[in-house]
Image (tube, rainbow, N blue to C red; front, side, top):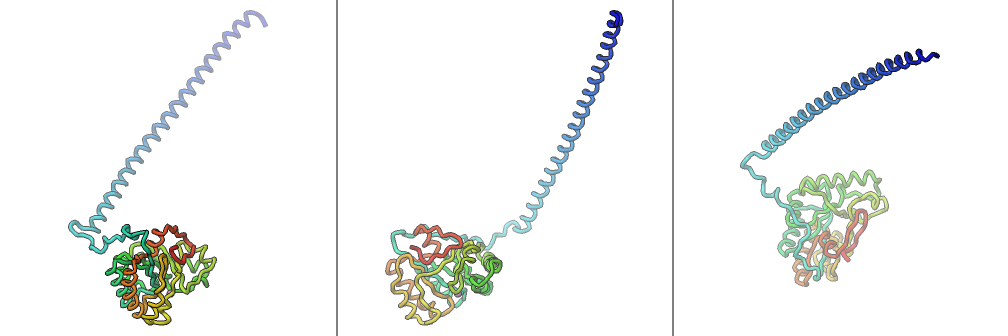
Length: 294
Ligand code: NI
């Protein structure tokens, strides 16, 4: 290559280089402009979406407000009964004094349960009722009255079926039905179960999520149906005992009418199972069996 040619070549090279630089710059600028435009469109859309979201929320709020107003028209108050919120654990019990938990299975039954609830209330006492779900609607007032007076309402299943003979699925269904019918009336689910026939097996322990409450004093009231025999079974009641009875028999009510003042005179505090466990420091676990509060 000659010298002159070299100079021409260099000039030509320089020209083509600047053309390429200009093209590249134009392309980059174009890309930047397109990217900015896309970003602008996106922001704009988002803004509109936010606006419409705010609008929807506002209209939902308005709707809520409207329903509230129709549900509870100005000036009307909810019935007094609805406001009762029972304190499950009394704070004025004396942990140093003996406690006993009377428990009643197979009810509610108005003419027996109401007598028991009445004598308990008169003596500043409470008990636990393990109700059968299929009786709950028929004796709703009786159960609600017991609940409102601070007694513990626990479950004895829906149909008093033998859970130890059931599959897990059946156990769950049985308890679900019992929970539903009780919640409808008491506004809350039971937190303890007494298994019918006192039967329990591993399948139950694995499936049932609330504690299972047994007893350590059996009055056999269902067998004797005799007030004095029931009372004689209660002679050796000690601190922490859980006593089994059934609010189905007038003889049981008659015995309880004697037993409650008698135990109070002896210095016993008559408590729910929940209270007993609370004051005795027992942290009851789902699927476990408890016989007393010691
Ligand atoms: Ni029973």
